Length: 579
Image 1 (spheres, rainbow, N blue to C red):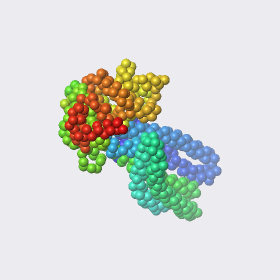
Image 2 (cartoon, one colour):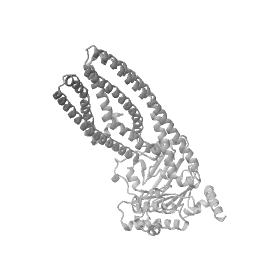
Image 3 (cartoon, one colour):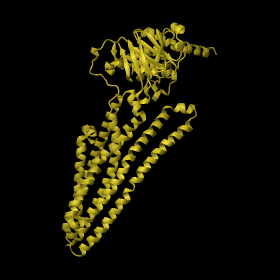
Image 4 (cartoon, one colour):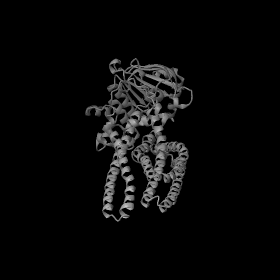
């Protein structure tokens, strides 16, 4: 685990080395201090030698200054290394998540991935920073203080052979329980983040259905569970302090009693007893620091396992990047499904969402996909850009299996407007340029006109430079859809997929958008998923999906004559219109 994560220290390794080195120097300065103080008491004060007292006192001041400098510098070095490590780790996780397929994200969940990239990384980052100071300082101080105490009075140092094992045993028992509880607590943080994320994303729906009370109850449940988990951990951690203080006080009493006898017998000097007590205090405080550090390490280990799980995940969709674009056929836009079957691996059921689909979408044609809710329309089009991989058969674009394309090349041929329209914070211009980063102003305007978005864009005071809030909350549903269509059309793809992306616009606007396809995307294969039959009547080919299979294909007129499923959909919509 340490080996896997240490590579993310990267360019901050020199700071990571400098920090513990300076800590060791700081400890050496502190360790020498009690011996110098003993010398002042036993020699300088005993002999009334002021010159000796001042000389030794000057050495103590110099050591204090060196120790302070090393302490401050080591803290700075540890902070730089810890922050750099955390930044590198977050960056690596983000890059890995960008390679995840939809199936991978479904498996982890967005809430859990956010927790792992923030809370978990922060916990490890804190441990790394502590490790370069406290976790280095405590054992070095423990060993050095033990050695100094033994050098003063070996028999008296035997007291620690009784105290330290008791402390180690108590720490070990508490840590054994805390290891499991830390993992539980991280999962509870996942649940809380998921609840918050879901509520904030869907806050308008919550308010529309007056479900704020329900959401508050759900949040309270997740919050209370996290609180209970945190209390369980805290209750076990606080048990350490009474044990540590009991051991510290007992050790101090034993040293004072036994050392006092030796001082009275003349076997030990008062200054040596004073410095010995200082070393005992340093030893026991070091053990306490080790205990707290081990608890932090225990939590960090739980977080590290979750982070490594993400970093070690092989994306469900493997990129064939080694095959260059030169080896692929030119982009024409032909899409072929050959005996395609598909099911979601995370669903837990063995049933196929799509079963043995075979059809071809010709270049330059408009293909519409219709069917009831949940029959697999969105799942079907998600297979074309490899958001998911087929579980049987193959999807081919321009005669090549999509699994044999480099992902960037495959997706560069496809423009897609998803069912859930997403805009990013920034200007309208910046959002549209996602379709083509180097688009000219003329291309930008033409795409906006084709998507019937130009007029409302220019109605804003800042036009294309109008700011879009996160998620596009400051534009209407219809405006958001048209901006997403413009973004996809700007790309001028070989295949354009519209997944129910005109549901929020009126029929006249929808018809104008369809006309722009024929005019400005004449060679593009257009795939439309729509609920309204009026949206697909002019399509060159209509596929009727029913229960994951193709129940019929043909033109609107052909299907009205021969396909019962299509007739039922058509009649239900006509009845709705007539009523």
